[in-house]
Length: 460
Ligand code: CS2
Image (cartoon, rainbow, N blue to C red; front, side, top):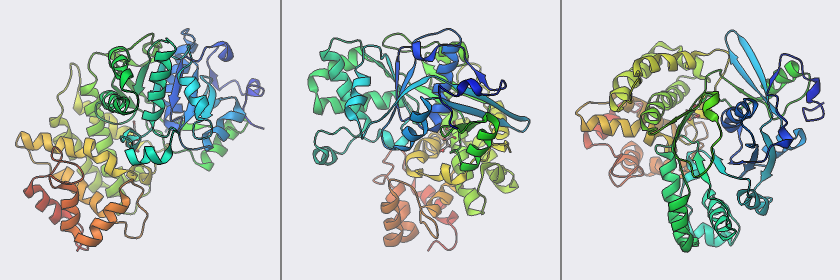
């Protein structure tokens, strides 16, 4: 039997849940990209805020690509559970905040209707790094009027709300980009210039795109996880997510209208997110990517295995403490040494197997903020970054794709650069000033030579 409104009453007493009438809440939030991360992070905070007495922030979850999330959540009336795992055991909570699910490619008009509903005040987004790529004009022409990218949907929201005299929205990007809110604001403004130039001004003057730092390790849910959750619940939950006890959410205090009381349940509203965001991207995510490529090269499958390897642990320790940390301009009260200790403990969590291959995906979209930005900052201050260069060599070797698939929007280009130019060719294609990462994140000639020396000897 499946979890749903009809069956939730049978859940064992040990399953925590908030006492609010979920169907009496207005849908104040539309979320774009309702995958596992959103369910374990923003939706969980929102559920807790409504349970603590804030109201009318029910979430309409929009999937921009997959139908799977609809099949998971629709038969369950949007209900699902979050299981927090650590060595001492697991805690399970029922989340009631998601009250609608829309698969946008099947029903674009419903997605637009949600974005232009009077009750909607906030749009949150988790669409991964590549979801922010500016739409290709050729793509748009080919697709005709059908919206595809976040910018297509959000531009229609701006136009629809303006023309109907509705309140502006706050767009809360929750992806691992540096200055995620600023990126979203600038790219949406540029898109409006093309598709609805008369509305750009209203968007820029009245809407808000706060920057955020989001943090919670959420491995992709496996079939075995779903079976364990079913044992705990006595019901099947196909929308279940499994995560760590830790969660952090730092949000720039810039809203166009009302905001949920996420601060009552652990989130922090601040004037400047930058120090938190930079520390998280360069230390947590930077270490994660290093664990992924170095760990896979040594035959490990999971984060907790890679961090148990003394060589990898030493390198990741140097990457965080000697190279990432000094590149970060800290805010008041930030202690990066303690932060590194906390991160290592989280990586070691044996109860939460986190696949390295999941982290290894989309490297071209990730390593700029995680590695190349701190490397450039260190260079500007005369500090070398050998650990980052070592990790970079592992990535460059990985994208050659010897004996394994490479999941990356640039996979084809990377394989071709390897085939045509060998190690020198690929290094130039990527890291020369005219390369993929552009002049700001390019490596110096000395660093490119150093990187070349670090590539596996087979890399001809
Ligand atoms: C990971 C992140 O997959 C990845 O690239 O580094 O998803 C990481 O688990 C989260 O950012 C943790 O907050």
